[in-house]
Image (cartoon, rainbow over the protein chains, first blue to last red):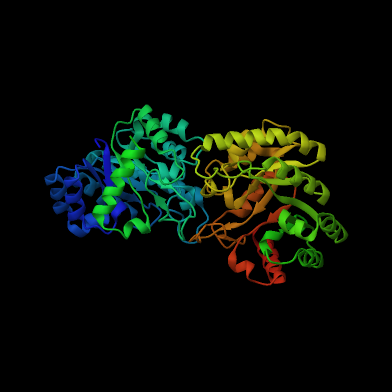
Length: 265
Length: 265
């Protein structure tokens, strides 16, 4: 369990105080937090809560959405929140095409420009901007960064201490270049998240993920690849799934730990 | 209209004789056919039907599914059917992972081996094996060939007269390397198909496509890119969409021609 981290979105409807208590009671060493439930609970209060529980905050989800109005202020706040919560890793989901736009190249330039603009602020705050490529099925509406190679093309323009990448098994497993790109990523791997792929995908495709071992992704092989690339950090299980979200938080955590132990280390 | 081809799957429920008559009446020069409706109508009879109507068969969908039992005989039949129908281009959708398998590398090797086995038969029949990369969201269950680059890595092991690739705007638009890969493809581009991307994706994601101009894909830019790579062949509109399929065939054809003329040439 030493590297296990529970991303709170896996039990989306479990209140923050309860998920923190549940993780601490289960001997979970780390937790991945989301900005919305943290803001709802209160930022400083949430920071104290996790600190007092002895939990490491392994990442904060999420900054990004650079093609939306107000991105700059929103991402400044996200950097501050990450620093306050005591995590180094701010996960960035780049955003998709602006409404009505077909200019995917332009959107990608905006992402690179935004990261350049934010990098000094992240460095000053001791926070790393962790670019997460999402599966290409999210390119239009969530994330124009669709492959690990593309994320690295951006990240490599910056100090690896300031701009890294997220490797999420759900988003990258299909890519025939993924093992080469993981090796290339090396010390830019800021976070490693795991979820499994199952079909059929549900409407909207956001909630189609599964716990490790339930689908067709070689989760352990990908974990071994990030390790071989030099990554020694936490392994966050992050699953968005309607069925899982309908279950009591403690059950979700227990199922997540069980699937992690069976399929990841 | 000189390059326009109507893929019959765009009006899935329009009987073959009617779609052929409708295309001929509308001055459509080419049609893309599917094996199942052709078999249902009768292969030789279908070949006469399209020939008598003066329509070019721009492609036959589809061979492939190399990870399924019986793939070899099935693909031999598909090659013969393409030859009988008078089309050079047999579209291959590779197939996904076998049930319960996580071995995506193994499935990809099977695809390359199957194409090697079929290439002599295709050559003898005067048919080109046209490898179609599908969008990565189909990797698990339909097609482990997910990018144009990956399709070319396979195709380049063979004579371009015998093994080519399909560029379908719906499947490749998200790829940040797509324009480089189209340039690389050159005379291996065996078919160019167009459809547009709209969100939200429906359950199962198969029927989420839209007519050119209705979504976020730079269809004309991609058409210009295949032209610049040397492609001079037909442009097939192929849209799988439940709403479109519920409309009368002549309406679907008229809507398809209108969207093609407005957004492709």
